[in-house]
Image (cartoon, rainbow, N blue to C red):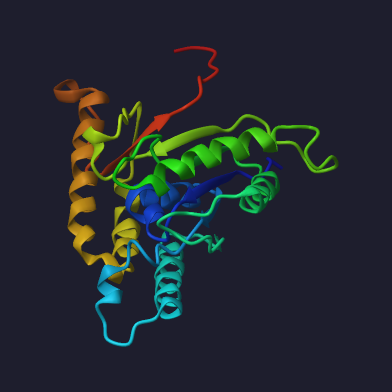
Length: 244
């Protein structure tokens, strides 16, 4: 019997994983992976304007609404394991306790690959601070002297998913993933995010544009694969191969 295939997605806020990696999550779940999603915060202060405009809204009500949205989206993508660290947002509180929490999750999951945000995002420092945090936690999870007795992490690739304003973020995709077969699942997850309805069509358009890029880079007019929807990712680490 083959070893269990796992992946880990670390999302700064409760909706980020949906917009930016929902297709990859649904596709790998369908292919037999067990994907774990960690939401560091609910995005309750900075990414819930629609909710805050409602009369009588409170912080706890916003958190509860955002959690329900994220859980529903995860279910739409086929994910059974979504975890909420509730670290606050704008800014995230990424101190030593949070680091130890994520390192424990990384070692528990032993992901074949990981996903998080772009390394630069001046519009939302929660995003880029999350990726710096994830890289640090990945390093600690590889350290034999950290909590001896736990299973040490190998060397999973970290894929950076697409930021909101790509041209401002120093993000350069080197991987395009065809998500056409699971697009309906991603769109259903997108529509779970009632608090950010203004982004639904934006990220549909992004997926369509990346589908065009997939077609062009898989053969173009000479016979590229007919991908209608795709997601782009930037890999951090070199890949080890036996042939090109």
